[in-house]
Image (cartoon, rainbow, N blue to C red; front, side, top):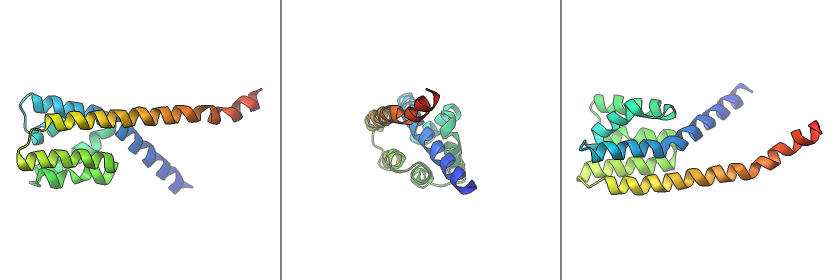
Length: 140
């Protein structure tokens, strides 16, 4: 029973973090367009990140302070949050490795993640009448 509740809580935290991912990408885009490197942009985003992503960003920042390359430090995103965040981490790592302009790539990623967040919300809204049917019948 406790393990089931722990798994539910972990899924809820992961979903909340994925919902906040577009906001994080926007923070990093703003920092990059202001002239910071992707590594420094992660530091700026870690201080201003949504609550659900702070623990992941703190871990990335800790790994960067220990001397890991940004590509290695960003593996935490994929491990913790799944494939959507792994695409984001790969884009940042590639831009840092090859010196590519990261802002257009992050803009596209932010659009994709925002669209996915909207679709997930619409999907959950469609299940609401089914979830409310039993309480409505019971109260009536």
